Length: 114
Image (cartoon, rainbow, N blue to C red; front, side, top):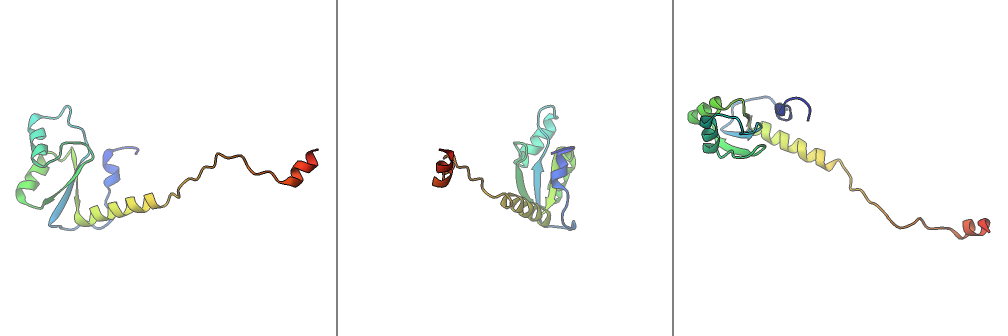
């Protein structure tokens, strides 16, 4: 992924109000303030690139405002769209079949070599 860690979470659908918010931690915890770490711990975000779902409440919005540089917030439609796009991307690659046996030789090719 080039550029910012936020590029993978660009909106693919119109942004609208949602009763549930999906929050993903995209920046690491080392070097952050202790208050921000405690806020992330209260939101159950302990590792990078983990997503949790929360109800859209004023207290949650206050916590998100405190750690907005560390997280990405998605609505339900945005989250479902991103997950669907990831599944489509995985489905495009066919499995690779590798054969380690030597190619079969034909009898006419063996006769012409003599």
